[in-house]
Image 1 (tube, rainbow, N blue to C red):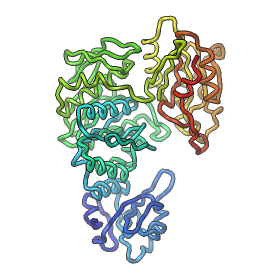
Image 2 (cartoon, rainbow, N blue to C red; image 1 turned 90 degrees about the vertical axis):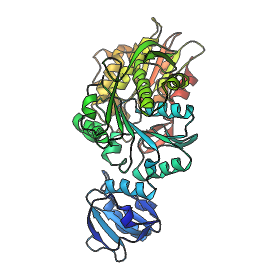
Image 3 (cartoon, helix red, strand yellow; image 1 turned 60 degrees about the vertical axis):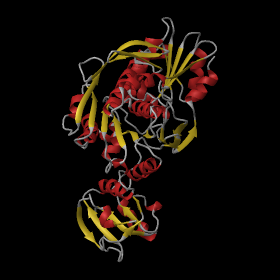
Image 4 (cartoon, helix red, strand yellow; image 1 turned 135 degrees about the horizontal axis):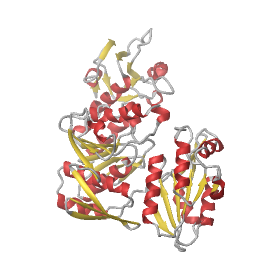
Length: 483
């Protein structure tokens, strides 16, 4: 148990009211989770202002409140501390309360638009295969060694992060690999953490419903690298037009990787088939089970990061070759009638374009490509017509359907997508809002040798409709209905 003064060691304090010697047992920014002896951190959120719940937190047992505005009549006996940025303070407090776990872990963050999940998971699988105990934070799952903890956000909140990393340290982990999202950086969820390395994959327009402009989205990603320390490494994709800008102002040691340009780490793509990729890295051929040229970048980033984490070159290549593909990322199988089914998480124009390019580069010459795709509700609307156009141009037959409509009308989302299609699109396009019926329709159209791509949801086992997450598994349903 620590007093509030110790917990605020790294926090910029503007004003204090009450004793800073009060002992603290827990920290929370959710008034509903307050326990006796807690410090409540009031955060002005995008939906709800946490300052509204200070009274409720105190009633539940909060003995201290960290906030950006102290109430006019502070409750006697409760310590109030005013700070410039309470979301930043939350991360700093949580890190100290849980014993600064990232000082005992080699923590590597992976950021970018696409490839975060694959790269972070490959690193986790690689290091566990090399004999290390490790942790993972990803869109698909959080994991401590073999123990899986289902994730609700790509980057958990600051308290969850420090708590889980404390568990990782206690369970003997030496490494941790984390997806770092633009939301996670913008909302200070990674505040208080010490990273030994950061990886940049690529940048294309995404989350513009939240960031509004590509420049703001880039700045959020860039903030992560700006906060890396001098002893950390910043590994960036120099083939991406934003790669150099991403690491321009970092204090960390900079290293580049590329397939096309000269870099610190280069690879040649030697073979790309439905059976996997073959890369040549530093004179050695590495055969892997992953598919698609976009995965060549993820594999190269993984290899380079392992080198920067001081692993032996002779062990990295052979270990990469035995790793399995990531769930919901070019997740494929072949039916008894030789129809290939592919499920992928592609939910941005760039990701969809890359996955369809991978399909074309690996399919038989005469095979048709049938694509089932939708767009998520309550998200960036500008990408909807772009995704529809890409899917139409790169497919022999297109089925527009519902993805996770959330609180939007699926028909309205599909109507936005239609704006990207030519006038005669109906000749080789179906519009079927019911996702199950859309998958069934694709399967009924498929002939021997054809490829069906179901894009957008990947690993997800639900469909988000009006606040309910209803059971829905693209891969299971595709496998069930394929001829």
